[in-house]
Image (tube, rainbow, N blue to C red):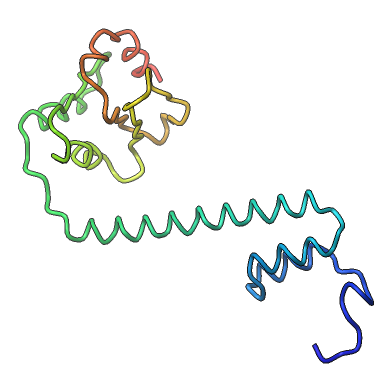
Length: 173
C-alpha cells in the first residue's frame, strides 16, 4: 500500500475483516492465518473458524470432484445384463405386503454387485453401509422418507441369516 497509515500499527485490524478478504479470495489460507494471529484478539474463535472453513471447503471440493468423476464414469458404463432373480425380487415390491424378501448378492470382488444394487433405485435413494469391519449395521443415517434401499456392502451372508428379528424391524422403519 502506498498510504502512510499502516494496519496494525496505526489502527487495529478486525479478524472478521481478514475472513472477509479470504472469502472474497483476495488472500489465501496461510496469509489469512498469519493476519488473524497478528490481530491478537479473539484468536481461539477466529482460528477455529478459519480451520473449519478450510476443512469444509476441502470437503466441498472433494465432493464436487467425486460428482464429476461419477458423471464421467456413468457416461461410459454399459447397462447391466438383466438377471431373472433380481427381476423377480423387484416384482415382490409391486404389491403391498407385511414382509418382503431380501436380495443377497454373493460373489468374488470386482464383479459389480454394489453397482448393480445401487442401480436398482434412483440416485440418492440408497443407503450404503460398509459392513467390512462392523459387527452390526449403524442405521442412524437411514431416513425412510429418503432411502428406498439399504445396501449392506461387504457383509458376509452367513452373519446375517440368523438376524431375522433385526430385518423385520427394518420393514417397520
